[in-house]
Length: 286
Length: 218
Image 1 (cartoon, rainbow over the protein chains, first blue to last red):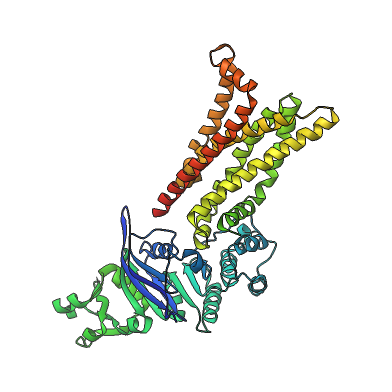
Image 2: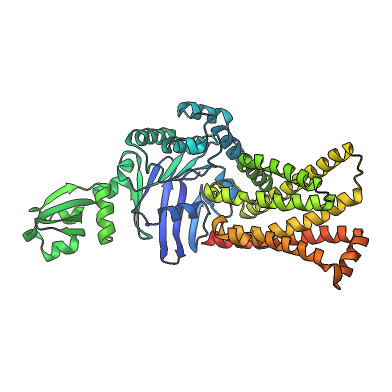
């Protein structure tokens, strides 16, 4: 039995001016993993490597326990993909889209597609280019769900969506994994979405992996520290990640264990946003 | 259905909205026919215009980010490329048969006889010209994408036009002997044309695979 639906081991890829360096992560069956980082962190490159749309320079990528290059065709039968923008021809209708995409899947279900179209209120006769951003995303999801995909790979699917549609989208994801047989890899820079649905998280910045593991562990291992300028000792300054000094004082991220020593400062629970921002500014504090 | 046929089918669905433009081909054939063009000339003109229209598939691919669709479905890189070559070839075949049927149909009314040798010669020469055009274009479009390659992509069209004008001006030169020889040995022209077309298509496909793979490597 496969425990991890997705595993990356020391994956690297170089381009002129950018290097994705030594990325390792594991996504167990039945869970949602968020891939988080600022623009240019390497999230899309990582997804393209998983899909073998780019060739990796080093490392190993296993999907459902199989090498993603050697077993590309078999693996892709069980993967559903949603990108940040639609990748169907804008003159296709919803019907044409089904006709075009269904060619590639052995387990395509016309009934499931129709059910999804009804559920998402997608107008069958409307052209892809005439659909709203939210509707386009739903069409990509309808296609991803119609071939019994076990792993959903979503690249910034919620960017540009209004809060109501985003909320609906997150509900759909939670419903999708509830039987424990499917997983989702979800890249985003809207971290509030992840706090609602993700069980695991991988933080990336400038091609480097900062953290990969459980969301609870990450949130539990950092505190947001704030204090007056006079409280900022040399020792504390060294302990803070992403230190920001103002006229009033300072703030930054500190390890949970070290935080206990600084009782004169204000310590708050850190959000994913706090962690991403501080780590982007200040690198990793081991 | 294998990956190649899947890709070819996808290409036809992709070009669905453009098929009305192919009707203009009928108008072009009729126009050339009324100007007294031979069946060989009609076939080559049809092939030239078909190449011009069918290459639009790369524009649609680029505009709609279809590389991401190809990358997300279970199809190999070689199948994507070969599927596109099959799509282009089927476009050519449709144009060829449309030309012949049209020529035959109109000829019935005017009591003109369509000779099978002319049809086969028309196929051979037009296929050679079509292969030469797309054989140069396809690797460029796979490597650079439509926007970057579109200016260079016009070169084979212009080259073919220039060559056809040049052949007509061979009349009083030593090369007129070659043209005359070809006209009197149609069997060699037919076999040579088809053979050369196949070689061009094969080489072009190999180069296109390498070019597309390089693009994928980033």
